[in-house]
Length: 138
Image (cartoon, rainbow, N blue to C red; front, side):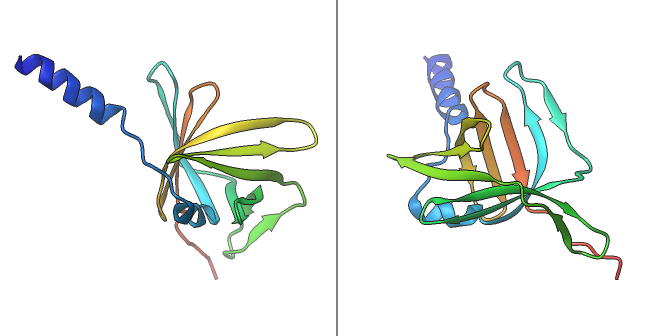
C-alpha cells in the first residue's frame, strides 16, 4: 500500500505544471537567456554562453519576440526581424502562438515567473530560460 501511495505522489509531483493566469503573462516581457534544453529522451543540453537573447514585448496578449545580441558596453544589437506572438490562455494553461512570413508554431508555457520561463514545443523539447545577468565593460 505504501508503494502505491508513493507512486501516486511521485506521479502527481512530476506531472505538476504551473497554472498560468492573465497576470502572469506580464512576466514574459523583457530579455531571456536560455539555460538548457531538455530533450524527450531525458538528455539535456546546457548553455554556458549565449550569443543571443530573446526579447519579448507582450501587451493585451499580443506582441513579438526577437533575437538580440548583447554588446560589451551593455547595449543590445537589434535588427528588424521579429516573430509575432499571441498568448492563448485556457483554464490555467497557456501557450505562445508564433507567426512569421515563413512559418507558424506553438509552445506551451510550463512555468513563468519574473525570473524563470519554461516552454515546451510540439516536439516535446523543454526550453528553460532565466533573466540574463547585466554586464558592461564601460
